[in-house]
Image 1 (cartoon, rainbow, N blue to C red):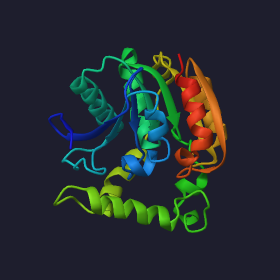
Image 2: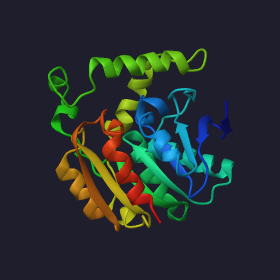
Image 3: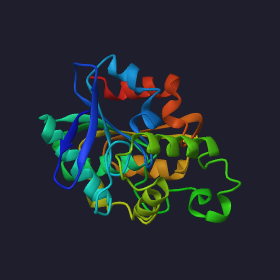
Length: 251
């Protein structure tokens, strides 16, 4: 299995397809590559080279003694690009992966040509109250289902390296990083030179109002709201999502 040795972390990645500007897929929190992208990976790789990654503490990438900040995760993505000799890529980041992908595009704008910013936020307060208020979790239809959580646990137990912390510990470590994230100042967002597709589900963690704000704050951005899609379903609406992504990335 291929790993990029980056010092603090050995980052698991896999490659599919060939040709075109490479596309980097960055999964969501507590997701493996398959949990986030199994429905879209093959059709996307049929047209181009796709590099999919698992971030710190996810899937086959071990957790390390480092806070998984958005800045640190973006640094890992940059390290992977350098490891593979990729000067410029397109990026599709989902949820947590959207945040680290946007940070990469802000810090190193020449490395990201186009960005799919899926279920991400640019400011604190971008999530629906169902997600930020624990009293709502039990009844919310926006939250991951019991089956979703069971799949996360199953994949963590199947793929995590020997001796890895259990999923509850990883969630406890990562949760505050996302929930306490302040987002980015306007000046940082203006540094993004990539053309951005802001994409959410119509029943997502992120509100439509906030997705509109993200579109308006980024210099070159469009917005797609995918119908009949919760947060966890978004990247599995392949019939809608794949054409949107391919249209956005097309030369």
